[in-house]
Every structure is written in C-alpha cells, then in structure tokens.
Image (tube, helix red, strand yellow):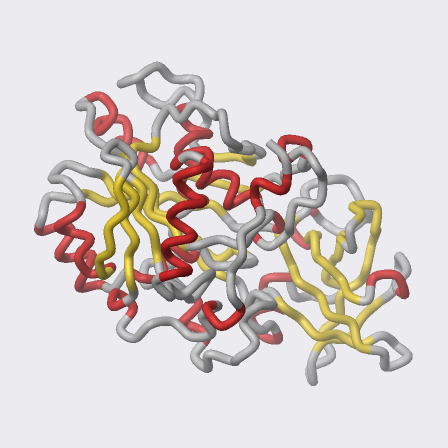
Length: 353
C-alpha cells in the first residue's frame, strides 16, 4: 500500500475541540459492508444497531497524566511525554523505575542529565537516547516512581490538534477507564455513558473489558512510502480470565465480537490470529503486541468495529481500511466531511459492520 492512499482532506474547522455533551449525543456513521450502504445515526442509538448476543469489547486503559514540564539545571525548559515502562537494560535503575519518554527539545539533551519537576523539585534523569526519534529512557532520580511523579506533577497529554483546553481532564477518559498506563485515550470509548451501557446490557449485548496501553503509534504519522514498511511499536495488553471466558464462549457459539476502537482490535487479533473459527485463544492473555494491521490482513476475531475518525497517514487509518476496505473507508470519510461530522479524538464515531 502506498502512503498516498492514506491521504484524506479534513477541513480544520471539522476537528473537534470539545466532546459532545452528553457524550452519547454525538453522531454515528454506519458503514454496512455487506449492503455497501452508509447510514447516519446518533451514538445513543447503538443498542438498536447491535444484535442480541453480541460482545462489545472495551479497552479499559486509563490515560496517565503523562506530560511533564521539567527544568534543566540551567533553567531551560524540557517537555517530557511518558509512553510506557521500559523493560530493556539501560542504567542501574530498577526496571520498575525506567520509562520510555519523548523529550523536546531532544537535540539539546545529554545522557545523565537530571531534570527538576514541579515546585516539589521531584527529579528524573535521562539515561539514554538510543531509542531514536526523540525517545529517551528516563528514570526517577529520587524515592518516588515515575507513575507517582506523574500523579503529582503530570498533565493530561492532549493531542496537538486539540488547541483549546477542555477543562475537566476526565473528559479525556472513558467512563469505564480503570487501569492507568496510556499516553493517549482509546477514543472510540469516549462516547459511552453509564446509561448507554445499561441499555446495551438490557438489549442482550454483553461486554468484555480488555486492556491495551496506548503508546507512540497512536499519534505518530507514517513516514515511509510503503505503508507496510512502517516500524510499529509494541504496546502492552492484558485480558482478565472472565473476559477471556466470555470471548471464547462467544466464538464457540458463533456470536459477534464488536471491537470498540482500534486498540481492542489489536488485542482480539493478537489473541486469536493463530486460531481457527470457533477455537479458543491460543495466545498468551497478557504481553506485548507488535501486531500491525494493514489492507490485505485476514481478520480472525473481529466481526464489527466501532471507531472514531482518524488522522491521515496513520497506522490507525490503515487498520480501519483493512477492516472496512480502502475504497469504502475513503467514501465514508468523504461523506462524513460533506455532512460536517466532527473529527478525531473528541469527534463523532463510525460503526463498520
């Protein structure tokens, strides 16, 4: 696939700066692949669009306050965006204290530099920049761990295209977020409310919660000519026993798994990509996944996809095109633009069945 196939024209005025209020009042474009038809609904109509027996797969990862403003000993400002725990062998800090982070301006930094954070003067140290692309291995320099420093000093890492402060940081969390660890929200889940989840349950739709901590590739554009040559980064996932039983039973009974967001797709396809239809998951229910889904991929588990509208030239858009079809996705996006849908993290949603 050529990178030009991931080019889409999204007018800047359609980029949502705030979520819809209430959350489930946003618009929902329905792309029916079998009928080759596009329809327009509200998100709160989702219970009427799913089937009794469907399993809605939710990513319960919670966004860390992963953005830190630090100071060099000279007083210079450094912005750090913490991505995930680092499990390699760099420096003497215990593994639980080492994290991968994006640092700006990276070119003016050096290994061993200690940075002060906040009025309490918590400290972090830059261990190594060998990860490239402005990514550093960073460790806590004092008694506190990186997650503890982030909870004390960190800010919500909103995407750069959101230029207005939404105010309440909980607006960038799903209502079912539980497990802290993401550098960005699994945004397809932002539209759910407790009441909508109750309505879905009353209609016979089950839910299964999995975890995938969103990392660098959510906001890193593809920068190579051949999309398949893009180096995907690993992300940590885990599936509780109860959720795994629900997923395995649904597959055995030939019921549909509805992935909420591209992150849930990656978990499901990682679990079942080596399984035949109806078979239980042969993969480990927890670990690192580097699964990269592009057009031509054969889906083993996902039967329907609920997703937001994604940025051009990203691995997320490539995944949607793999599931919905390249031409159908482009047609759906064109219709969404013509219909003045709201785009990206705080924007409207699309259901592909």
